[in-house]
Image (cartoon, rainbow, N blue to C red):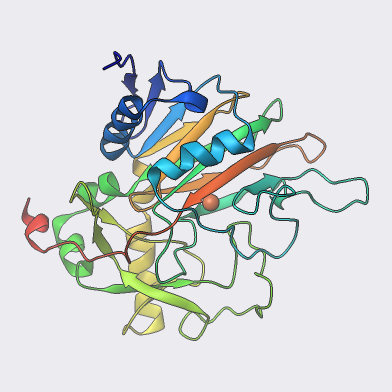
Length: 293
Ligand SMILES: [Fe+2]
């Protein structure tokens, strides 16, 4: 069996940098080491990779089946011939059409596609062109956010469900075919438990999705808003911010982290290719026993 020289360097509260693996030709043993680190650190950063879209797809498939890109309001979704690769970019083609999604603006904290009944398990972003500054992607640990919350608050929300709105994308754009609405009780979306257990590690995590149009099922709207604001105040307490370099690939667990993006200079070019791993199961409520742990 070949030696595995995968090095894992923790980035703090969440995230780890992985060294010693070429993702275009990773062995089974290296993939196993990567997965082990991923379940522990939730976000993995790989530097200096050189991946074609085929390489990106092949690496992604080690984590499960792929999901098609989300419905978005503007921009093309995928490079020609690669329907499972999602282009995140502000670049316009020769006809002035966006080559990808999300433009150059800020994207607020979110879980990818949590408005779906079975949201993706994971997503990864690979950088092909980056601006000189701005456009950093930040991740927060939903395990740490839950752990830092007062026990009384965690207990209060443990058995509640939060409805995840599907009207707006993380850039604030209305998704294709939907009408703008600001009533979270009636907008399109899916309820999920407020506190979930990771299906592999078993660890408990907050599960919030997006703040806009979120709604705690069964509560008066004003009480839902108040409680959501209180819960969301813990999100910023456990953050890793990634400053991109060319050839970086960042893989994140979409069940235990949320992410956001800083705005950047509209005149600069930013091109990322993203893949998404299909949800293996609907988010499951964490057992109450974890509250006392
Ligand atoms: Fe996202």
